[in-house]
Image (cartoon, rainbow, N blue to C red; front, side, top):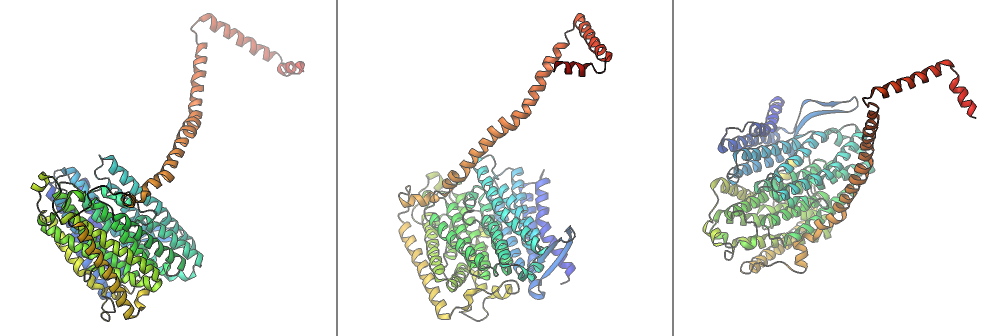
Length: 640
């Protein structure tokens, strides 16, 4: 395939979703909802088809780097607007456009009650989200990546606060935007540091010259990059925005959690694996933060009763596993888990949306139960998603999570032990969610039960496709212990990603680790179903459960330690510095001029006698001064 054709095709992959944004954002007037949805869906589908073509071109001929124009040229620093289509970016193209397309199709039915103008606005934002994410993964340098990075942050704000008349949703959107800006500052500082040392941001040049960087420079650059990843991919302490992002429509949650925004941090570190592999300090920090986040978020998910909140904290936990994989050098495993997670987490969110749709927007699982017989397709697809995320073989989550845990064991057995504990909690809370929602007897209202029915095909077909991918997707990464050269994803990504640590374990050890993790997960599944099938937790949690239900009171802690002091400081600056100080000075000058003007206007009395008197006095003074040029000097001297 010629480079010119690839250049054109890559341009279209990015521009088609942007065209959908323009069409629905500016030209929706007079269009039906069906036309609006078609524009949005067809644009993403076109990008997916082109991404498939690019994928096979790269598989056959290798990577392509194409330049469209010079973005910045300041002498020593040259930054081009370039795209790099290689094994890593092509895989993400398929995930973003493929899963993104299914979410668009699902949205067409899920959002059908919206007014046409808001329906068009929703799909315009959705298309724009895809555009910026494609820009992020295709950029051939960190500056183009950063443009996409900021763009997905903007789109998350727009979509989380889509129902803008609800102030709580607006607060959630603002919270996501601000917390991401905190992380983005770290990423931006890392880019500036990189420029100051190498005078370039192009991936190929940076990685080729990486050995010339000192250990301190590499550590600081990678740590600053990781701060950006912590914000975008919701790691401690910048994770609290992601559960609140549930304020947006459910398909938005699926898009953010599965195919776009939260995977950006994983992609950035995987893309920068050459730099990260040079800093043991950064690698350890990434692994520890990821592991702590995975465990911490899993404990919170144990006691959540909002169906979307359980899945949200599950996403935070699963992202922690991905960072654990990155931190122990299992870059392929982390990317593999991004892929499988995109399948089963998109499936779980969309299936949850199907439940919410059937329950007339009810999200409390304590008011559900027994939905298995009313929503058969949603039930079976949700069950398959739960089996996948629980790591039960042969579902996709088993293969990707096992690869990360094996690498964690090779690095430090304690990492593995804690990782297995997190996996056990994952299996438990997911099947607590499954059993409470779908098994037992229905606990909702009679009116809700009367109207329960399966979702339309536009919603169930994406569920079926994602369920198949959740079941079969793991076979792209079958461990070497089962068959030589069976890890197709590792072979494909090998030109751009370093070898992982877990690949050097003895086969007996790896079988043992697999057996233990699967056995513990299976026991957690059985225990959860037996515990919650007939006796779900219907009351408010007490004791330690209340702490978990209230998310360890982290939001309250942030509010007390950060938000309230900042509000006090802002009030001081507003009332004392701004109003009394700056405004007082400026307004004081205005009042002085106003007062002086009022006094001076009294001279204009309108009485002729007064004007003659002033004129005579002025003439006397002038004549007196002209009589002797030195009069004033002599007068003053005489006084002393």
